[in-house]
Amino acid sequence: MISLYPRSWRQRYGDEMLAVLDARPGGHADRLDLLRGALDAWLHPATPSMVPAGAALIGGGAWTVGAAAALAQPVPADWPGYVLDIIGLAFVAVGFLLVATLGCALRWGDTGGNAARVAIVASVAGYGAWMAALAGTAAGDADGPMLAAAQTLAMAGTLMVGVLLLWSGDEPLGILVIVAPVAMLVPWTATWLVFGAAWTLIGMVMIAERSRPARDRTRHS
Figure 1 (cartoon, rainbow, N blue to C red):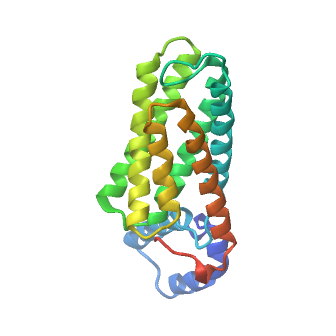
Figure 2 (spheres, rainbow, N blue to C red):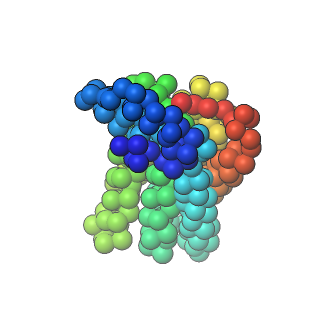
């Protein structure tokens, strides 16, 4: 069961944990605690994962390219502003941004309570519906209102994530996570560039944070 923990955790605490278990063999409750501890170690590592940062950079960059392509059309597309040429790129961007949003949400650790759970569920449901609507649009089975509704749900979940980050003192990340969905809620395709730029900056902030010494990082677990 110790092997379920991340390698960095095992290198730091593994021998000590094995010594404790050798001195007092555990029961069923102890095994459950070990499993819960392994899950927590993966979700809240001492060194922040690069996955959310990379997802934010890729998703933000892909969305910015797609937004620029949509704005370059001779005739602006009807709201919500999608053109078929960017549907595939938008689908990829939304998938990466779902990962980035969840990475931001996990920064709370266990302190978010019910509000955190609502934000995570809304984000997963919203981004999932958004991807489904984009896939349907590519297949000719979806329309503008469906895309707009799914997009709005995803932005509502993202906005909740940003508010909770700001409430917990996680700045400037919280501000950027608020700016991104607010830009997308404005019914003007030009604000898509703000959305993409905000997520790109979020990725850069996460990378800069990871490069700081551990004692200088703000912990949210």
